[in-house]
Image 1 (cartoon, rainbow, N blue to C red):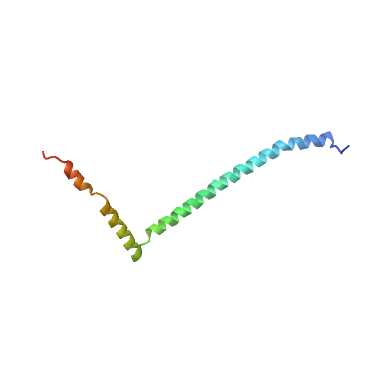
Image 2 (image 1 turned 120 degrees about the vertical axis):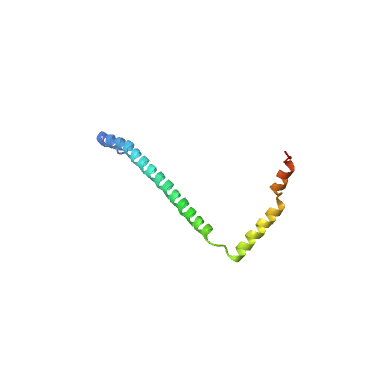
Length: 91
């Protein structure tokens, strides 16, 4: 034997469930848009910082390391000019 709400109060509370669901859905959509916008901002700022790092001149040690790496890579690769010259036939 519990306390029951009046029929008018029941009708009002049942009617607001649909309204609350729609209000919550709007907040969810807004939150999703805010997350996407925030993610795009983080990506854009990060790419700007990376470009700034690439634009700065190399230190002497960094330049030496890059130069040595490019020399070893070039020595390991076969030169294309030799391969092309072998396949050419005189006219």
